[in-house]
Length: 122
Picture 1 (cartoon, rainbow, N blue to C red):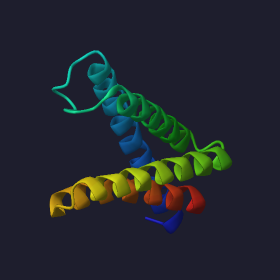
Picture 2 (picture 1 turned 90 degrees about the vertical axis):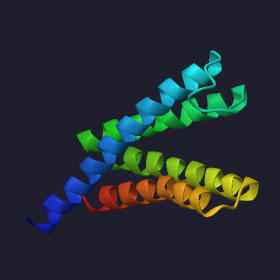
Picture 3 (picture 1 turned 90 degrees about the horizontal axis):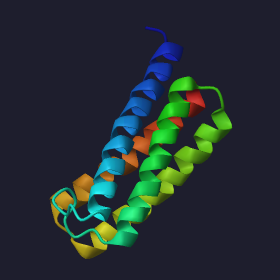
């Protein structure tokens, strides 16, 4: 497989992950807003709303990443998602510094970095 195809494949894989991740968190945020605290326990209305906006941004980034039509829009969405995930990581580490919490907080930071790399190289 050539380098161009592998980089394009990276963007497609991360875009599909963004779409799946975004759909999951839209459903989870809506369920949390209507009182289904089973999905994300302890989430208040503001956090559910912010999660919903972040999930929609991830879904949009995944959609546009699969289409690969507008690199500038993909880059902007990737940077916004990266900033939101870094802020979330910082707040998570401040609230609980267990190893599992840090590892589970780093993974959402890695995906936008891979997405931005795929956008830049495709």
